[in-house]
Length: 614
Image: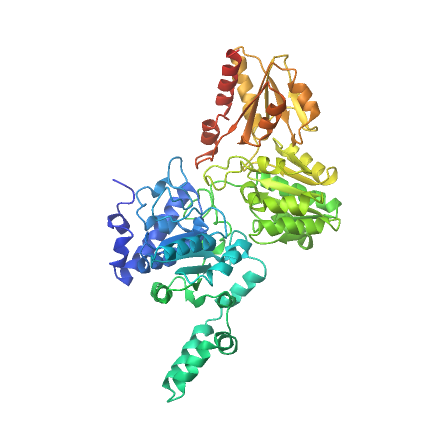
């Protein structure tokens, strides 16, 4: 018997049966879904507040539209848990984000109802437009629906999609879920504009009043209405106060109460009937139905396991690389007024909240706009400022061109604090930080540090700001430090016992390398360990060290192509790189490290095999 059998949802053929039930029954299901979300995420961890806010909206979408014939694209997928429940995944919902379980995001290979992968922000309109254009070309009259959080509207790709979609003459519907939050509180002019829309429902009321009055006016009423409609821009600007989304070419519906099922279904049905690009504005409350999440939606955006009654998380995250990075940057900024800090809507997640409080005039939150953040940093650097941009490894990927064009060519000094470097675990393929090394080492005027402990992180950040030139990256993993070894004051540390085999690694793997050496010592197998701290550019000093060994095994928590190990192996034939060879699924970090040959046990086994092969 499943733990979910007590829920009515378990006996339904989903999503088909949602159209057969009454509005009252649908509302009761929404309450049931909230209970399932809170209970499950309290055990598995995940994105809670964003999903509690979209329960009624998701229910209405599935009652009005016909998935999978109508294609629903979620932006970002962390608000799609209810979508998973309403598309037949209740029985496996307790495996959410677990090893071999459901993904925390939308994945087409998980369900036919997941129309497009969704891990990064601001992509849904572009993806949905591609789907809508393909439908139009094949004479398919179904709809492509992009469900977008208002935080995603701070990303440039969102507007690039709107620019094309509004004039596309396709059946694309963009639903903007406005809750005034992304991960941190939304910032910027777009957020302000959307906030004003939330409190302004006069648009369609005015339109309806004007059109009803003209319909009732004898003789001249209908011709005037027709003339006004043909003078679309004048009509909207003068009488109806046009939204910018209509200026993009969309019909506009809303604002709708995102927790009123009847209103949502009526608005979405109207949008569906238009058969043209439609923008639907929906207002929701992030964390709806769970007081701790409503009160602190930022804390419950991405949360570990927690106690339902109190809302207290099981794990305190103050002991982390992110928090140490933020605190050290704040201390350095007290002595150097040229230092400024920057985030792309992740002030708390990247540990910059203390800096923001201490130096509000030297802190910039640019919204979900990594490309802008990098070019903005270049502009600051051109004026002698030292920008420090803290960003997740997987999100830095979005700014590759800007790093080349706007920083590297002119050799501007910008520091990149690359958080979540390496394997991150339960967030899966879209969030694993395994590509930043290959990305950055392909760009001139770039240096990279990869500390293995907090003390090294502090020293690396200080050197990156005060001693280095050009682009300087300091990359560090998610979570807290593990045991490391050796001196932390230089670019490397060699622990030698006179062996002819050398293990080389950097970052978090240094603790696993030390344990691997212990395993090998117990088998009377000797090896030396070389810990790299500054991993790029390639060092002649390091080349000289490794050239003296018979076998060098280079373990790296990064994608193998473009990695540091591959670079050393290209000039030293005795170097054997061992690194990640493809995308990394979602599972606990320790499981994934072992799966990719990077646990202490697997490192020892690989080293022993190489030694015995000679």
